[in-house]
Length: 241
Image: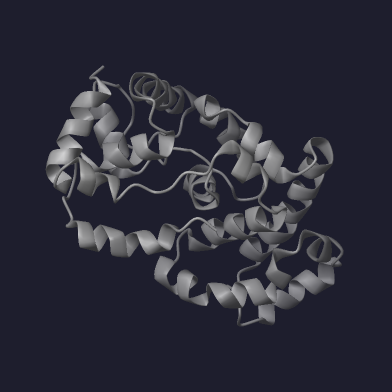
């Protein structure tokens, strides 16, 4: 497999040098700071990732203050006490996406966060303690125990909340494949996702860079070379909550 230094050099050349590339990299929270976040923010970012799936991301971003209002700022205690019929009322609430599976996911993820917090002290602590070197394991856990958190939704949730993670976008996977890793164009099997994880683990050992930055740099090294101003504008959608 190719060294990460080769990928980094290619990305730096495409983005105008080391300093310009660094400006495009998303801040990553330390384990301590991640563990100090309120569990309401984890539910909020789960909801945002789930509602963006198959929908216009800009529409969800513009509508987000209304989501916060409708769901009581994602207060876990308040939402956890609501009876099923109260959740059904959201089907008539124009402040949210009126699609029952996505509304139901907010309800089920409220319970998921509550159950996890009872075991770990807080959901934030649970997320902070899970090792980045086993992101595939965390993705499997979120898919099994959470609601609609499989695939890309789970990865974007982690990125939004500030967990150090990689996201298997088309460009990231292209970079991984170009480096010599034999995986599908859209990895979904445990075998392929483990190969991607192992590649990122090796690059992390080589560079000491966080997985978020490894993922971004890999993506910047291939594909359409959008100008930096356009990228920065798009990054507003991915601000850590």
